[in-house]
Image (cartoon, rainbow, N blue to C red):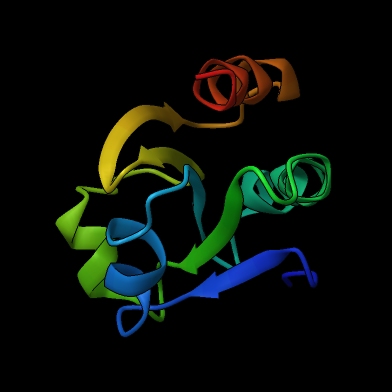
Length: 111
């Protein structure tokens, strides 16, 4: 479900790709069966392309990677978390408009 600009994040690579990363990382927690997650996918893809080289964008399949989902208390999907230097900068729960993500990303990229 991910494109070339969207990382596939797993329990195994999350620490390295997200928490140990010095650049901002936008992480979409989703599941194949989730309708709103599928509706959000084109927005995530678009953001990954627009912010390429400035922000990493990845997706975590919560069904296949329960440890990470539990670690970040993901109780509803889609949940999108913006990490900055390994810390949670912003958390979005539920389907959000693209402008909400852009505002959060722009505030970090501008710094």
